[in-house]
Structure formats: C-alpha cells, structure tokens
Image 1 (cartoon, rainbow, N blue to C red):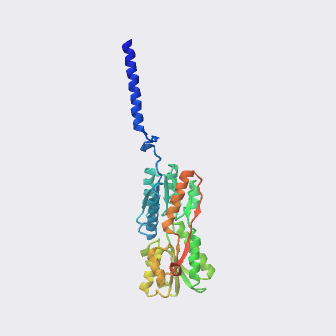
Image 2: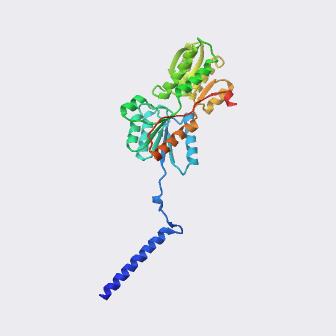
Image 3: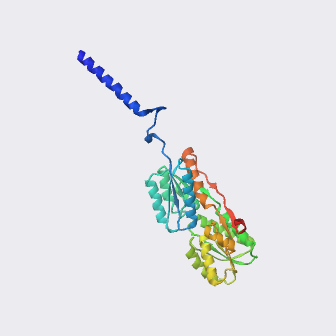
Length: 326
C-alpha cells in the first residue's frame, strides 16, 4: 500500500513538473504569447487585369503594387493580366486559378462585360468577394445570373463626352468626324462611343464612320488608314483609348495629314503626353490608372472587414490637354 501511494505521489509530481515546463515554453516576461499559427492571417487580394501590353494596365499594376508595399501589414497582393486584350479565355483561367488558391477577394477589370460573369459568380459562391473595376459588367447578364458585383470606376460616357466637347470647340458644325471604338464586347467601349456621339451630335458634327480598333494600336492604324482614304474631308478622329490614338496618329503621318485632322483619345498614358504637348493629340481623359485598382482594393478590404452589402462607387475622370500638362 505504501508503495502504491509513493508511486502516485511521484506521478503527480511529474505531472506538475510537465505543466511547469509547458508553461515555461509559453510564458514570457509579459505572459503567455500566441503561437505564430494563432496570429490573424492577412487577406489575400487578387488583381486580375486586361492586357499588360497596354500601358494603362501596366500603370494600374504598378500603382497597386506600390499601394500594397505601403500597406504590407494589411494585405497580400497577387497581380496578373492577360497578354492579348481580347484573350477572354485566358482571363477566365486566371480567375479559376484565384478561386483554386482561395484568395479572399478578386478585383477584376474584365476583358468581356458578359463572358466573365459566370466565373466571377463561381468565385462569389466560393466565399470570395468580387469587385469590378474599369470595365463594368453587363447589368442584364448580372440580373439573369442572380448576382451583383460592386463597380468601382469612372463614368466612361461622361468622360468621353467631356473629351468630345473639347474637340468640338476646335471644329465647326457640319465637319466630318470618325470614331475609333474599343472592343464591342466591353461596356466601357460602348459607353465611350455613346459619350463621343453625345458631344458630336450636340455640336452638329457629322459622324461619317464608327469602327472598332479593338483597343489595339495596329488595328486602329489599319482602320484609320482606310477611313482617311474614304473620307478626304475628314476633320477629326475620336479614339476610345490612347493606344488606338497612337495608331491613328501614325496613319495620319503616313498620309501626310497630321496637321489637317484632329485626334483625341482616352486614358492619358505616358506615350500620348508628348503628342499632347506637340499638338498631335488634342485631348484625352485621365481616369487615374495608378489609383483605379487601389480604389477597388480598398473597397475589397472594406467588404472583408465590415461584411457590408456591395454598392457601386464612381471614381474621378479628368480632361487632359496640353495646357493642363504645363
């Protein structure tokens, strides 16, 4: 009996010593410390853009990375984009990859306003917040799909109308003009075309041609060359982005009409600013590419924190001319 009691005492003592040893590992001068696995995980935000060959989206990516670097304690960033502006399938694959990686939010500038809705719905069903920037999803497709994603971005129609109104001051009623549209499957392309049309019709201009350059310099160059040949009295081109404006300027240079036909664009990329100073491009619109993704990222972080219902947010768009660059 005495032996049994002695063994029990030894066992109890060993248990106490073990507890003290565990406590020694846990406790520091200020008490018990959480293990690294108990620390709250930073949200991971995926930024999915269109073509990084377009200076606008490269500026967007750089702005997002600079913001994350300045806010490294708040979130981690995964940024990616497609090579071809029209490679919708590749962009869908990128969203699928982000779903598989279980990111907390996806901030997306969709290459197609309709085709990206189903995969973004899949992301939302997986518990991922989705924020739409730059190019707005099609409202009818969203309604049919029973989903809503907040749009954070500028009023493209208003921005294009502002550029068109500035151009109209340099022309006279009845002058012939042409519109180089963006991709027809993109909401922002449609809105910019409408904005240009609003301004030209209000000023009494004659729109003789409106064709897509699919956002790309080379394609816009070919379209513009054909329009120049077809309409010898043309007075201006209204381009739905600056990349296409570059193609139009090249076409005018080849045709020897740089000083006879005005050009306006949209985006305020660096490559156009020198042309603005030289008078080769009359005006463009700045929707602040370096901040556009940041607006979306901040909203995504807010949604994660507050669980608030999504709502659209309009961001600034400004008229840029040679005078505003001084």
